[in-house]
View (tube, one colour):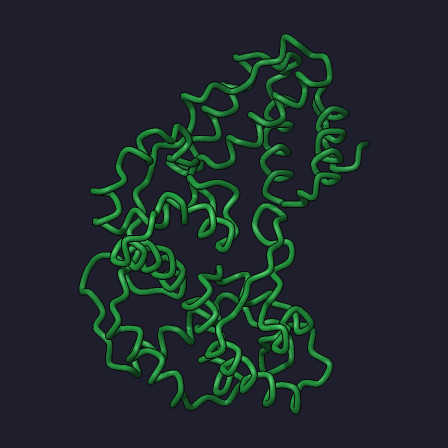
Length: 317
């Protein structure tokens, strides 16, 4: 019996591969779960060679359950590449033709009026929880700094330096960390939140907390966003994409691009800075967020056309 309960002929290699990924900082359970499915398939069908028939046979079988979402294919593709680095030159690496088709993002495009009304309502929120005083600060970080929802939720109490005017995002997506400078207005908002929270939750781990002093959950963020949105009397489209917290991050990206364009700033020179601030591994991810800016696409279509990896496999963010 091995560490993950694998039973196929590939069990030892699968364990070694997962140990390698953990040393690289990748501990995701999804990878283990899907490779476990592959292992079970190989055991059931007595597959003993990591060739095209084995890999694509499992992929075909898995597609019957997963539908159009194929981000899990990257796990078996990466495992094949790792086997090759171990001297197994005949190992089959899943062809790129199995990658998921691009699914266009449909964010809700926030207007200036939407944002002003939202924060006005957030400042008047009545809640029997810390959200009463931390809602403005939480959503301000998403709006003004383009944070991911998970980054705001996981922000450590000791990762906010109000005197220094910055926050530290540790081990975010892709195990990347970054330090983000804050404007004076954002510092003031966070300081007001910190003062109240510190008096009630002196030993908290995260900057934002639940009523029990624990980190806030993703469900709580969505619920509070919807409550504030409706309290502000903002419209909800009868069909199509509904507003969500993550739209603040989309707005941060395309609003910066449109501001630079209006100011005559060289957008191509600024994009690497935007990508770094948002925690993107490459400019491709940044293009994904700013494609909602029609002006950008009209003026800079040649940039995105030159990017061969612009269409990432579904499953990111």
